[in-house]
Length: 114
Image (cartoon, rainbow, N blue to C red; front, side, top):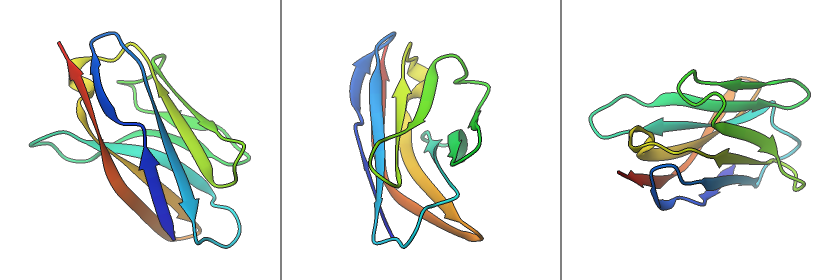
């Protein structure tokens, strides 16, 4: 399984970015895909998860600002981030799960300047 993340970058406070995660070399569909992030000196934390055929889960810190959605391409999810804050600065990692098997993508850096 390969997870390709894209869309990170530098944005000013209040701005928006969209991250995309596409999975390849996978048979069938994942149960869920989502995003985690890790800021310098901090533990990796959950951001948002899309449960295929189910609902979406969000960290309290991003509710009402971030939206995770399923893209038209199979095994692809997008994370629309709005009203970005400096504390959203982190490396964002895509995560996919099928049964008990979890896969991680490489990180994409999001930097929010004040």
